[in-house]
Length: 343
Ligand SMILES: Nc1ncnc2c1ncn2[C@@H]1O[C@H](COP(=O)(O)OP(=O)(O)O)[C@@H](O)[C@H]1O
Ligand SMILES: [Mg+2]
Image 1 (tube, rainbow, N blue to C red):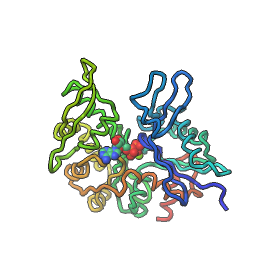
Image 2: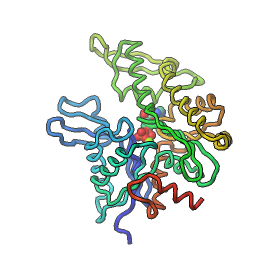
Image 3: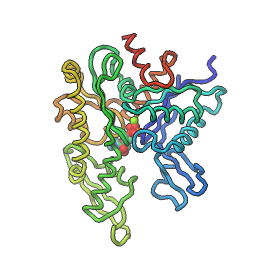
Image 4: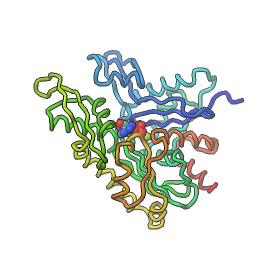
């Protein structure tokens, strides 16, 4: 009998998902920590902490410790993981082995920070795999053979783009333009157009409800509430999807340009494969209306959104638990080497 179940963690900049062997996804929480500034004590983590963002009294701050892609606040990341792992492994006697997904192209220092934070949060062993690789597994792409596939994972803090084949990553890129960038664009637009200040939670809600990066068949609009820049008094405005699309043009183009850049770096054979297989989108941010259309149009390659795009990385991480015994601690490469042998 196994005394502890292995787990996989999608350590996202916006959301953390935990996959438990034999069970599936057992935890899904925003990566937010609420801290008492005076004592340094962690008050809440996850959804409870997120609700405090932007509406906390003076001595409480809500932070997103992974906001910019990797660990920007080490101590908070560790405390947050600690709370999450406690939630799911209350009854196990032995600490779990953990596979964590990290963005492709993380530095060695960043790798070590992730490993250390996960160990301190209660893991027995930590293994790293690359996020686009997990995303591809979770999107059920067959990446073991020589046939090339492209995955574009649009998260909160980063967009990870990769061409995969032979169980590995052939070309990839990670940029810090993703879901958060569009929230900021909504806030900047409201300020400039209407002299109105809105919080980032509101900006995200507006983005999800009416945002788009490609013409909607019918424009939509929504009433947005905030505060007047000058008077500080409450204010509301009707905002249209057409205006937002304009505000999203630049970041949307930057993402598509990066997709084109990765294609350009790939061998002609792989590009031909991708053209045949299509581009697959994963990550919460790819659900912004029209990303699939926009990428198809600019690359001239069919583009589809994976099933349950929010969960792909966690599901792929869970899938990779199957070969955890042949993985090596402290490196991100072994998972794919193992697959290559099988392929
Ligand atoms: N329906 C939606 N439409 C547009 N954006 C969405 C939608 N659902 C989630 N998002 C965005 O997805 C991002 C989070 O994606 P996620 O893959 O969880 O990020 P990460 O992997 O960085 O934690 C956020 O910016 C969020 O606003
Ligand atoms: Mg992610």
